[in-house]
View 1 (cartoon, rainbow, N blue to C red):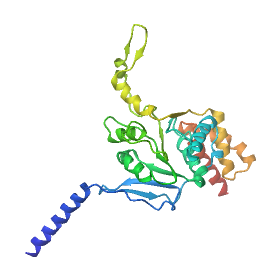
View 2: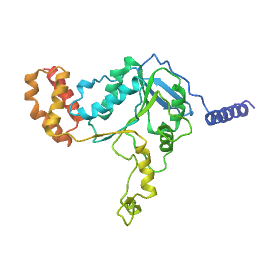
View 3: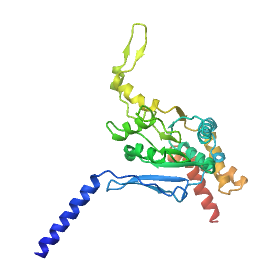
View 4: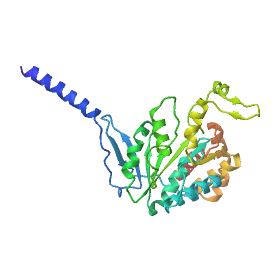
Amino acid sequence: MNDQLTAFLARAELFMARVEASLPHTLSEPDWNESIAFRYRRRSSGQGILSAVHHVGAMSLADLKEIDVQKEKIQRNTAQFVRGATANNVLLTGARGTGKSSLIRACLHAYADQGLRLIEVDKADLVDLPDIVELVAARPEKFIVFCDDLSFDEGEPGYKALKSVLDGSVSANTANVLVYATSNRRHLLPEYMSENLTYTHTPEGEVHPGEVVEEKISLSERFGLWVSFYPFTQDEYLHIAAQWLRVLGVPQSEIETARPEALLWALERGSRSGRVAWQFAQDYAGRKSAL
């Protein structure tokens, strides 16, 4: 009898856990004074959690080299947002390792003392984006919702949630929330050669995209500011590597002699990105400090 009761209670607990997981959960507020950056995650129970990031990676705008045009656009837009002026959601696209996410992090540090905060949301959790926006809408701080390395496959649910928040939902845009997203795809969705066949041409020579292409363009068009990043030349790569070596305390005389090693490091990795330059500087400075 006891065994049957134990089995029944176990099944009842399992049933209740499933019922609780299916019920709507109210997103609770974190301690906003705990950090300048927060991360949203959905647990297996279905409960969304906003947790403070206790060790936010340090990054200065002055440390980011060879992206001055992009830096000026992002910094200007962020400064407008922080002081309460109109500003745009931002899509940063282009070559990997060129400083897209680093630039957003640097802006966070630059304007944190003026009330700027960041909430990182993974692509898989974007379906909860309206709940996050509603939670912070009445807060005095300014929030950047940050989506890193964003791209969608066909039919993913987060796609429509993001479109709704950016523009076109029934509710008005929230004045203290902007979305900053980075992506290697300008239109955020895969594009196929067959879609070129859906374009139509008028007798006057006008070109009109088909419905499939229009749908793919519609999300990226909801970002008011597009900022493109491009692969670095050899000289630009060396300039960035030298900058990071200086930041890590390598003397100028050694920085000049490190150039051949920096080039070899990039050649072995098949890339001259800012990320590769930073990785080389870490390796070089670390080896020299051990001598």
